[in-house]
Image (tube, rainbow, N blue to C red; front, side):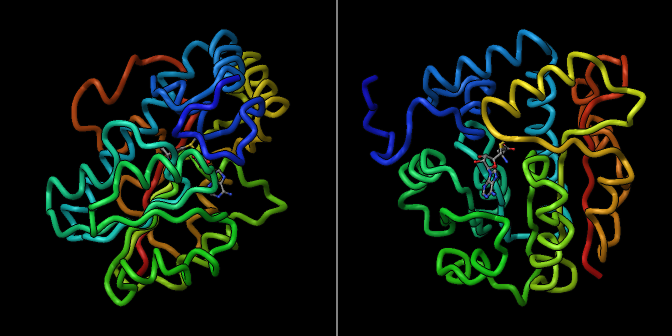
Length: 270
Ligand SMILES: C[S@@+](CC[C@H](N)C(=O)[O-])C[C@H]1O[C@@H](n2cnc3c(N)ncnc32)[C@H](O)[C@@H]1O
């Protein structure tokens, strides 16, 4: 397979990656045949998947706007992905050009593409790191050189933590970030999940395509999702299904139907 010039030399083009499958679902151009094959297979099983993903992106936009309205000007976007339209810096810097954003992802394509897109923007940095190691992220020059942790920072974990298993201690990982934040900072999380009695065969089957082909996922129910906000005060409306978090238009609410299979919430550090 021919390697496009934006693909770093050390990545395996035959092995699907979370970031590139997501890019495919979002209609982006930074994915390979292996990513598209898995992405397509999951979509055939669960056609509503694209709508679920668009809802995570819409939640991200609404959260950033909401937090800008609350005076936040610094964002640490963990598991930021391959940039498409409506990235955090576009939203934040269009409201205030002084806003600062540090992007962090483990995926080499996401990082390389972010760097090339963002070069010249001095209020944005890009770090390649594993977010499960908060100490490494919080001491990296790309983060410490840009963000002032004496001032409020919004930590964004959008469609990320369902790739962190219970054994990897997501609550402890979040605490590693939370403890470094100044009072008045925020943690925003969106997450795949639903209650046990809402599970359908297509949810199970789509997840098993992902577990086998890309990386294992952990769906969490409402109580498990809520536990992620330990040590934080939930901002109104609390833990809700993604479309119900401060919808900005009737479109954000989507079609009424069965409960939406993802949760969203924002916590504030007191
Ligand atoms: C489903 S995508 C979401 C991207 C973006 N947050 C968005 O909402 O559009 C998940 C991203 O998290 C990244 N990711 C997964 N596990 C990670 C880890 N342990 N450390 C850093 N990034 C990770 C993947 O590479 C991918 O880009």
